[in-house]
Length: 330
Image: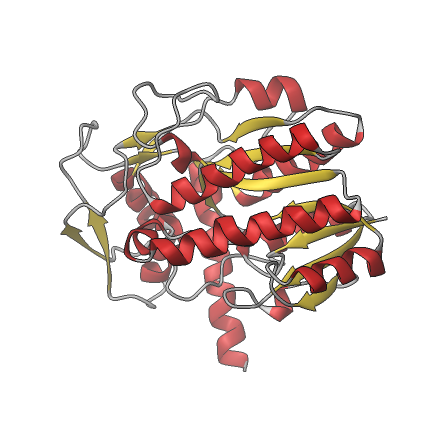
């Protein structure tokens, strides 16, 4: 039996594929390559180029490869873009996810892992935030993900589909072995952007808002290494394989760093004092959001291996430098 990874040619999805292949799993990737890269899908994983909203294609892939579990990453993720284009985000993140669920149910797929987000919490009253905190997204991105979570809950009540929704906090870093990393053009992830500035790809970076109610006035986030994140997914698959019931888990370290902290870390690791400019707040950005991670540790037995900001930055920077070498060679 095979595992279908949607969006498996993208940043997080490609790391998931590496983890599953390392475990000896049979993996098939469905990706439309709008933001992913064909070369990010490493053999022996199989790549099918197409859209998750194409129900005939999804049904064919499930039948052809004997898919019995879906790990669903495909979607749009940039908060300010979602504010500018809410209909596009609801189409890509919600409508297409509904189409994927429908085919999964019709095809007899019983295990489903969903890539959700901490954005479902909005600007939480308490930090760290637990899975039982009020859900109040501040952007169409967060709302589009929450709507998919709600649909999964309803589908699981009506059909034989068990799921885990993983609410990501701020994902960063790269495969420690250098096999994959974030290559997305126009990236908005802070550590990626700062590493681009450190390697000369950007003339400067901008800090969006310095008047938040935090210690230094900049936003505070919980940064999780991408390799630890994908291990949360494999732990979730093990949980479902063992008969686990539908559930939702935060994915973070319960540790927050400000934007200024991250910029300082990238400057320290790279040895480059790149230019930093102050800018206005962005729409949809909460002041501080840090994961409560007790539940995922207790229920799934997940234990992070890269819970260190400087290590995360080092891996991200090494990947950025590797991209430079590959570009020069080509």
